[in-house]
Length: 109
Image (cartoon, rainbow, N blue to C red; front, side):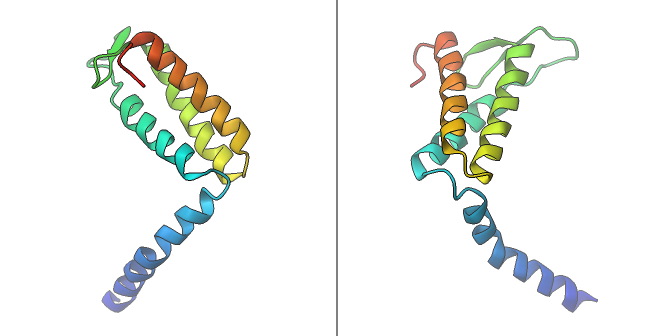
């Protein structure tokens, strides 16, 4: 039983990067870098308590809870567009998220 688990873990480690590369084949490296960066910033938008109206990102940006949820949803759709090979849709959605971020924090680039 332990041998099967070890084999499964080894195969997952070997095939994981290949599966990731195949899953993002529709998007170039620059777009994927931007997506990862925005996921880090948007991922920090968490309310401190239930029902909190405003949330803050690690870079000091302030957003409503609805804006935070919208950005998280858009980034998920960007990842899906990359998997589906639709780089144009992914780039458009990323630009919209970047614009909202820049409107709330001028130092964002």
